[in-house]
Amino acid sequence: MKQDFINIVAEILRETKESGVITSQNEILRDFLDQFGVHGDKEGELFLNREKRIDLAMVAIERGMDISEVIGLLTWKDFEGLIAGILIENGFRCIESYRRRGNSAEKGMEIDVIGIRGNLVLSVDAKMWGVRGGKSSSLRTAVVKQKERTMKLVSLNEHLSKKLKIEMQGFYEFIPIIVTWLVEEVELHEGVPVVPVFKFNSFILDFDIYRDLIASYTG
Image (cartoon, rainbow, N blue to C red):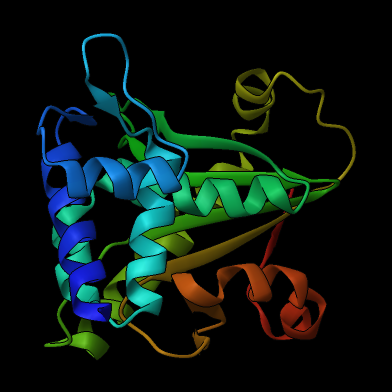
């Protein structure tokens, strides 16, 4: 029964990966999605938004679906959306895919998710890694780059405030974070938290426990 559930979810995620639309007339899939609150339109098409796809993926993992298989069925935007959704649920205002164009004097920059709550700014790099080979080396490189991006972000508060449509006043604490499928527990690398996506919500709830151990930049 558990494997049947996983197979159905895998088929749904596979078919909806590009467009979000299910055109299959498979009644088992349709009945299954009906239980998840996904209903067809007049033409019989079913549409799964990003939140529904993420919900299905997380439930499938809880039921034993291999994480690397799930990753292959999700998009980068799905993963960023999951992280942003957790932050929003915890009172943060968010920007996904924050970009600054480069020029001849300065390199461009992209941060996957930025969350602001009060005077706290979380700068999140979403690493959708599914393999474990070279883990330590990959993490070290990712940590250094995320620190660099976050330090640069400190000087872009005016641009950031326009993006968020809020007035940033006073001093802000900018914290680099990496969220990934790769690790099992929260790890600290050179003061940068590397958090498994399944524990990101609890990490935010327990943030004060980690705060004194975490690298941060004030601006």
